[in-house]
Image (tube, rainbow, N blue to C red; front, side):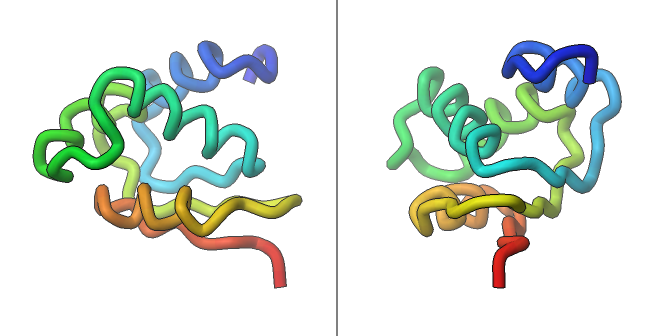
Length: 90
């Protein structure tokens, strides 16, 4: 990416529409926060899915959070939305 900012990451995700995303925990948290700024976190996953797809390019199915701790609530959030998020930590 051209810079480490969230907006740059989102622009690139929309442009490339990846099926896999490997990133640091901070970016996963920022992505969750961005989605939740548009729709409440406890909303029906079916209602949230279009918001998620518009943020990440529509094809994201699998993710890896690496290089630090990520709260289990963030993992559950993405898994509820059909994105299998795993940890790179042992």
